Image (cartoon, rainbow, N blue to C red; front, top):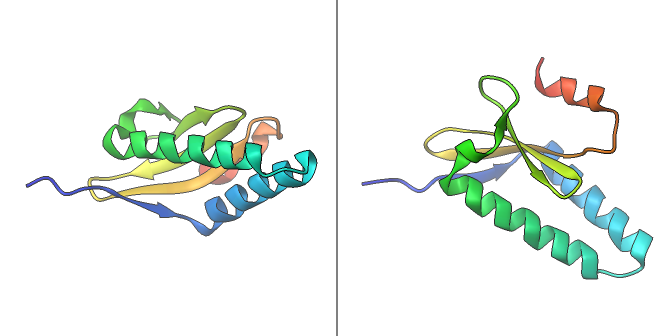
Length: 101
């Protein structure tokens, strides 16, 4: 029997997602785009649950999947898809180093 992989959001990823969605809500003075972005992120995560290798490899254990201007940084095993961060690609890329230490 094949066990279904489950999603776990790190505290960093939860904070990233909240900050991104709040930013767009305040910037646009509307919740339309944040809702669409959340749906897009959730759709990609559903894909990653069944096909986690579709993301590009950052290190031996960490992968990334691009969603609009964001990277979903994650790792996985047979039981868990761990979302480490949602990284805005318009930031300084050196900030990604924290995932490789």
